[in-house]
Length: 59
Length: 439
Image (cartoon, each protein chain N blue to C red):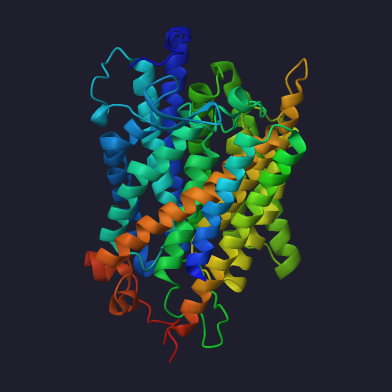
């Protein structure tokens, strides 16, 4: 889960970069950028929850 | 290597910028006092010494290669062409400021400011790692941050990098707006603090067997509140000098920037005090202090473009966010952050970056691309979460494999002062027993 979270964060960033580089119309560009940030937030939540799991396993 | 804008600077402007830059270490002193006051008394000397050593390490690492990575606008850089546009990813300046002569005052000024800003960024993770982060690990982690993480993002923001050029290359607003370093200093520092808090884990006794957090109050509220005032003075320098060096502001803008900074901090402290009073019956000193710093952080990005009432509103929102974020991270995600560094620097910093895009006045006559300023700010936030956080976490996790970052259990029980320094900060006082340890 931790690895997935830390992979989703750069994946979302690449989505934002792609939106900036490839889209010209403001609405799709903003939509894809927001989707990229949403993917990053998902990765952040996954990473945070995986660290909680690690903590619970500690004696 | 001469900065393109050097010819436009009078000696008076250089003197004002130098004076403002010299104020920045006061922000470091303020954060050091706040972090020390919010920690335990048995780790106080360690916290202050760690802050001093972090400054030394950060300044050295920045001089060695940080400034080369950061570069200056118009200077040598590593550029990749993609989608028909140049993407400026990193500076390619000289190591150890090689070749920068004493007559190149503007470049030296930018380097001095960058050095102090790197030192400030290094103070932020110390708040999250309080009471359990080894001194040797602090030095190593700080060196990585000051040599690579901070300068890389500072290049994107201040050194003419791809974020700063979003307006010119892609018609997105005026490019990423961040005069006072909310992104490279505050949010990057806050995300490093998050990485450190994850890697170190919570303090011994912070969570009971059911996973519920226990309150470990700071040991000295006076240090915390005095640190807030020192930080304000330091922030005048950070925002003022940053706006002059990297946002094209002149000395005449300094009064507006100082007013915006002070209003944002004051509004945020009042908001945090009101929120804690409404929730707990009485205002909480440490959370109100966190609110004050959150207001300072939130003011940084848009300090040169906000009108004073807008700066006040931005500060109030930051002051409301900070106490909720502190509680949220502690309760929901089990993150032990004694100094509130993640909430104050990462969360409030991101809010400030977004607010700069939402509330920056449009150019006259209005241009259609100015309506997309928020998108440039969002791209900066995406770069912080999607690039800086994985980078800083990966570097610190790698460091942890070779050099354990967390203190041994015995050291945590005795206190960092006795274990790592051999003497406490308050030798005349009775040493407390480990009142927070589960028996």
